[in-house]
Amino acid sequence: MPSVLILMGSDSDAPVMQGAADVLKEFGISSEMTVASAHRSPERVMRLVSEAPGRGVKTFIVGAGAAAHLAGVVAAHSTLPFIWVPIDSS
Image (cartoon, rainbow, N blue to C red):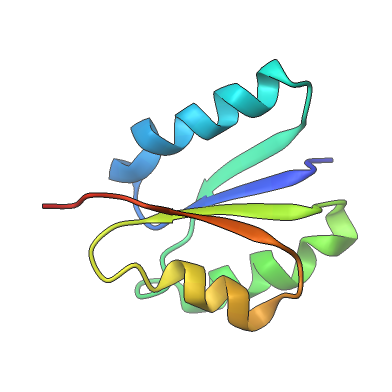
């Protein structure tokens, strides 16, 4: 079970977010990384967030570029702490 759920808005965010996964691994913290767009798949985002505590997730790391709505959606649907990673999309 992952302790940290890493969410990103697009596959193109993966190189940046992989850095978070690498650091967590160095510290022996389990994580899972997945793409879930607040715009293209809002139901998936809400499902992942609502199911996270039952899966053992203790916190989120959320990365998104452009409008960056993903962090707000996560914050609106969970009381778990999260770290927002703004990603340059220009």
